[in-house]
Length: 79
Image (cartoon, rainbow, N blue to C red; front, side, top):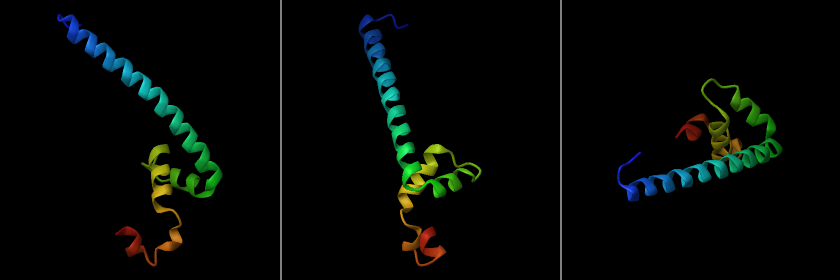
């Protein structure tokens, strides 16, 4: 609690806003995950088997890479 009521109200509003964003982002994350499962389920499942790659990172990699065949070599992909 903050002694100044204006500061406390601002903090309360910020926290309520963050809660609302977290709720909406959770819905968006679920939706994107469902879309990825439909578009490329094999690659998504494969990415999730790599240690350290979770749900969000696997989606990011999947959509950033797109079609892996567009890279002529491993070096082109890595760069």
